[in-house]
Length: 331
Image (cartoon, rainbow, N blue to C red):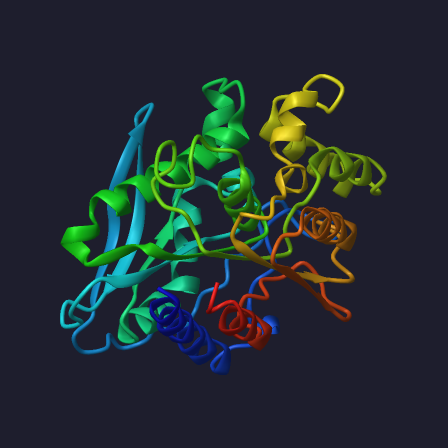
């Protein structure tokens, strides 16, 4: 078991390192939470096209669930030529939970992660990038707890991937979960929230490692920080918080607690790497520090990497990601 996971983790490191060599944190787009000097929907950055690698199956927009008339989809890359069960890498993109970007425009972000999925498949992975119900649609249909519905969408995607394990050759016991900004928030809560049993009941896939960048630790505290921001940034952030959780912390204390990964830190959870810029305005560094303290108090396997002069960006291409995964290979 130890040797199997060592091979798995070494493979993860090699995959992601190959991505890091072709990009830097500065190449990644900032998340689309509007700042004081940003419009509500800034242009979406596009990745350069890459020629498909031979022997790689890349499937776009695979339906994994239908929720209230919204068909949820994921992209999947794998190599049919790789024999045996393959480790699984799941990526949850950051996009302000789909609140400030329309559902169709959000799909343009696929260009940012398709190269990663292809490289993962070249190295023997099944790699998936997961979409979820956009927050604006959840608000329109008066969902009582939009954030948890988004987390439930990730659960549905994981359930689909688990049920498709034989078709795609997935090893359900070797899973890495990555996410940045809103995607990292969703990934953390999925990975750490209480479930009936880590052995299977109540959860479809159990990530061994979770890596997040520029993400949330404590929603109630984040609301306080957002309320102290200057206008118009303040209103944009407060509107997002209240749309996500159905109100403010006084009105929805249980929901704010349930959406705070730091509240569910536990020693038997996945190994966790937190990466955060020290000049992040949209999600201040304090959020990463609170999560780091909670994981430390719980005795969880984790590390915090603070990026000097780092803004609100996707840092999942940093070499620290691969170092962390290698170090956790025997767990």
